[in-house]
Image (tube, rainbow, N blue to C red; front, side, top):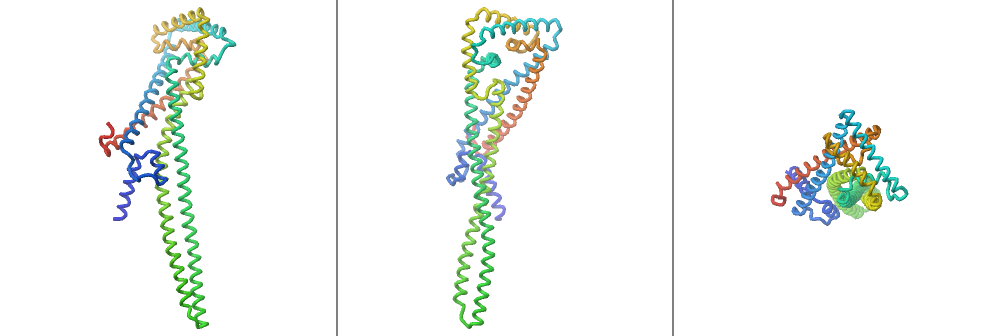
Length: 377
């Protein structure tokens, strides 16, 4: 009966802590928690927020994945074109690149950012203002996740130390008690021998020794129980810390993966650097007004390339006007194709990872809704 009762109690505790937030678990480990299930309303809000975040990442990643697929499809379409059509595209692309080179020459010595960064900013000019806000939010979120991870690691270290100290204390008490038992037996034998050979009554010393032994035995029992309790409590809290740590690590991996791809795409290391590049790009765009004639020629050539590509059924004809050199430079085309293939692989892996995490969150929501109906609508 006692065994099954303990199992039932343990199962109930695990179910309760399944919905506990990081902050509540840390408070409980410090003896400040309630020792029961956290506020269902708050837990429901946290689960909905996790689902919302997963859906947002899925949407962003899907958009990027579709764009990469279209890029790859356009390259394949170009490779399958007749030689005459290829020659036409290469000629227009060559002229377009020449106009771009002229514009770069106009700006030489006056550049605030490199030509490569400038072209990259221009390629993503429409999406960058909004992306800067998103990146800042993601980096702030990543810092919060890192803080949670540090707190949990610190708590795990503290709990491990408490458990190990309790185990050491138990071992020391056992060894010390064995020595004491031998010492008491020796003293008692000594008293008996003295009583026999001297004829003196040794009852009082023996009673005092027994009393001391009883006091120590009581201390031993209480201390051993306290150590056992500390070990059980520490192991239980360690298990909860590991579970929470695993959840936080999933958030960390997900957010880090998204940011790493964004950094690679925009060729930066943080949203501050990207903001710096974007602001300097805008300043250089203002300088371009001095070269209206060249810009008009460039725009007309780019539009011409877009129309030709649209005629041939390219899925993203507008984008290629900013990457025209790949059409007439075979080495650049191969390098660009390799970059696209690598991004395609990463985005596919990210989509699969997001799908698993979303399914996991949905499973938690279903389990929570079954236990606490009415909190999640």
